Amino acid sequence: MLTQRSRYALRAMLFLAQQPAGGRPVPMTRIAAEANVPRKFLELILADLREAGLLHSHRGKMGGYCLSRATHLVSLGEIIRVIEGPLALVPCVSRTAYRPCKDCKDEASCAIRIAMARVRDETARILDGTSLADANAEELAAA
Image (tube, rainbow, N blue to C red; front, side, top):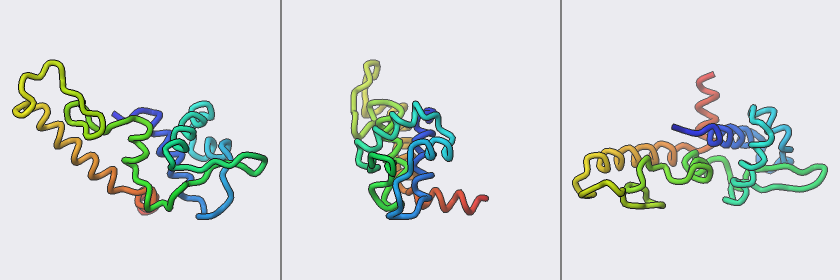
């Protein structure tokens, strides 16, 4: 299940993706208000996204945050991985944080591992194939 922290990150990034490209940085207070994210959580989330290279921050009176890349170049999967870590539900199918399961007798024939690998692959396909631009377009089409 997606954590509240990831939902906050996605809402903040989707809001920033709606801002004009090359426009002024958006103050954190505005992001918090528009994306309906508590400011204390948002500060930590934005720091993680900045460290991952998804955002730029600007200091000062006219400071704030803006996306580091075009909206079509930032996927929902990338954002979730920054906040949550790997998409895999079990460590033995993770591509970035593999660990064998302690109670598994034979990874190659483990029915749980095989099913979870398919879940991971489909989840990654959908989330990595959905950019901020796609998500915002879908939101507008649904409205």
